[in-house]
Image (cartoon, helix red, strand yellow):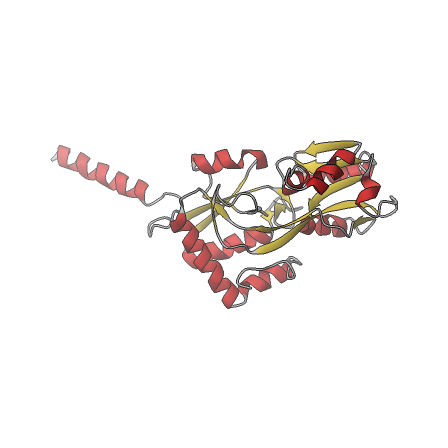
Length: 264
């Protein structure tokens, strides 16, 4: 009798553990862990109340709501994102994640945001075009799309532009780079246009974007290569959100209406 009871308890424990896994598309899976850069507004960041918020996190929350999943927001070091994904610590990378040039490295949703790389400078800096950046001190985030664009060997113009800088300094996050721009330690920062717009607005002006684009790209949700089941579930849910207008409503709340391209 005691042996039967022990076997029954073991079976119940095994069932309980199986029902508490991470979101991978199975019916019993209830959590969906999103990896994101916590200093990348307006897509994902910590607000003044200490809460993680942003456009991408709101999209993920709605996807979870419609699939009866629990959303787990996991801030990560951006240059450790691949390790986090391959180890299973996160289910996807969802945070202004550029697809271009990475098409074969991840399993992607369809693109949902059109994005461009720009330079931000002080409004009174006298810098008006790329040629004015010659000899200047420029900042960029490590492992970012802007840095990739500046190092793109297939773009001689970008390489020449990079080589014209006096210094190119890499930062762990854009908030720190912007602080150095404010302090006069930088002359310009290369960054995503959506992030640039947010940073400029949050400082009540004083900074401008150059009219020229360094590069254009698209954002997607990146999953571990081969994880098509979970990708398809998220893709189908985003499609529903696009069709019923929810995706556009969330984009409007974050000032990104003109950037959204999913289903268009």
